[in-house]
Image 1 (cartoon, rainbow, N blue to C red):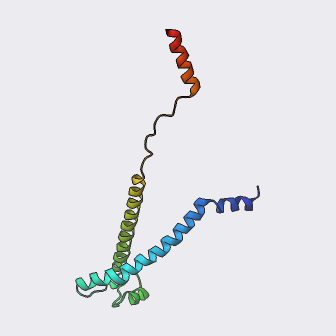
Image 2: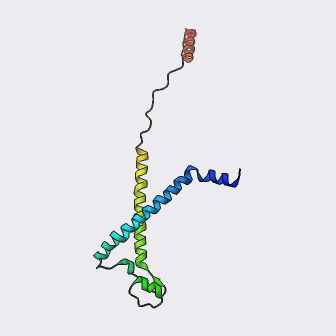
Image 3: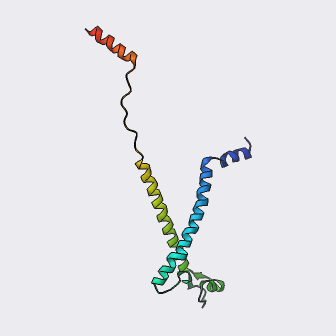
Length: 139
């Protein structure tokens, strides 16, 4: 088997295709969660704590006096803990949503009814006949 035919066989297996679809959907879902956190949740949290924007929370490590994160990064190293908080919140939301999805899938798997116990199969005719002969010989 040539290298290319072996690779083609591997690439078209169901698991590889399913994984590719999962990665693409996961990437798109990640963007939705990023937008939810960055555009909806963090501004609300910022408003609650006094109108501050978490994305500009940083500690200058090179003695910068910049007021925004972008300016501080241009001037040297910074510890951007506000960005980290946003990414951490992203992760927590994404992990929670995945947990709920897996929990729902597991619940649906458990709800599938088990096959009802069926009546025992009828006894074959030859066995019935042999039993009748046995009983007749006992008499």
